[in-house]
Amino acid sequence: MRQTLKKGLFITVEGIEGAGKTTNLNFIRSILEEGGEEVLMTREPGGTPMAEEVRELLLRPREETVSSTAELLLMFAARAQHLEQKIRPAIDRGVHVLSDRFTDATYAYQGGGRGLSWEMIHDLEKMVQADFKPDLTLLLRIDPEAGMARARKRGALDRFEQEKLEFYFRVQEGYMKRVAEDPGRFLVVDAQKSLEDVQATIAQELAAKLVS
Image (tube, rainbow, N blue to C red):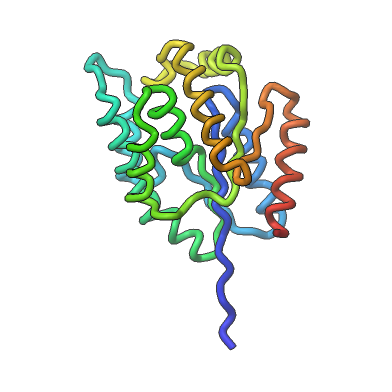
């Protein structure tokens, strides 16, 4: 009798700049790999050669004012490529996929931050993803002032990182609206606690997800 291949988990890590996404993505990867699991790490926008080119377009500072609608459409164009070429094939092979941001970031940044229609984003989400969504989303919540202070220490700021602080408060509100809409999928962690506390919480939730 042929054994059915178990699908991989799709886990996303969200949060504003300076929340510690990279550190905690690497922590999750280490837990999974120590358990003998195959893991693919990726990011949005980006993840494939074409999607990375779109990422460069989106993040590069420029004098031209970027249309919020154009920004939104580019996000989903990159996502469509990313899903088809990288995320879905890996999950179907039984590989766990960890992504630095996904569609929740679009709701938060383009919906909350830019003020675009939630309904318009939802329509594009259905077009590109159908019913596909993460199995678990870790939202690292940090005060925007603290997050941006961390981000500025990393060096030159990209186009989004150059936004005013008020933009990031709106983004944070957008993220919390997403949590309210789908609370069972999210784990909200106070990213201003010690790294040990943050990662203990993540490890506990991940263990529960892997045995469910």
